[in-house]
Image (cartoon, rainbow, N blue to C red):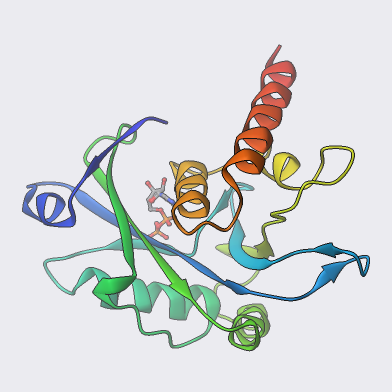
Length: 197
Ligand SMILES: O=c1[nH]cnc2c1ncn2[C@@H]1O[C@H](COP(=O)(O)OP(=O)(O)O)[C@@H](O)[C@H]1O
């Protein structure tokens, strides 16, 4: 899905648009896969009720609450934690090409490994668990010798523009090197292309 980047202020001045707010929670880790492959960072996404991957969040009505407090409310429902989202956590706003009249606001929040583990534990007993949210998942950011890892993750199906939100956050925050990211995207796109044939 192609989307056009606009400012948060432009988005808020649009009439008759819905506002979706989603957040990427992330942090650093020293953990090594199989005791040798550095996982480097933790990045959380979720498996939704419809089988698609996306970020925690949902629709917010800016006429009734700020984008940040609406997003905090959605996080409470989906992840069972009280998380304060601030305007500084905003990363981008995009005009969705589909569905029409939707803007997608994207936030990122850095947390410690311990805090992220607490979120993962709380999510299992959150009210939406097993209903709107089937579970949190960590994004594998590494590339294995057989090419698996990030590229296999990117070959799954994503809701809306969440795949491009993920890629732009990984790029902007420098969580994956430019070379590794481009290689993973190329490999994933090839695999998606061959599945489609
Ligand atoms: O992670 C995401 N990134 C960007 N857009 C998303 C993401 N998840 C859902 N959306 C879009 O946001 C809108 C609201 O969906 P969502 O299911 O999150 O909210 P809701 O629970 O308030 O209905 C939908 O149009 C959906 O396509």
